Image (cartoon, rainbow, N blue to C red; front, side, top):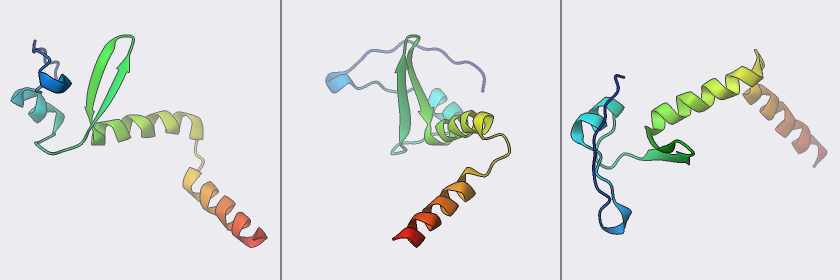
Length: 83
């Protein structure tokens, strides 16, 4: 996605309107959930799809070929056998 920039005001109740061109670029429409993250560089607004992709990339760095879901299922089965 190419970089877009705009200036806006914070409205009543802390509301910020995301301009149409930015919503289209993000792939979000009215009523969609978004993920907000605030850090030292500012507020980041991401589509849920983009946020999930970023999390998957982060986890993949540490999983290194392991199937975390298979490990979790195996762990749950061992716990169930103990009960």
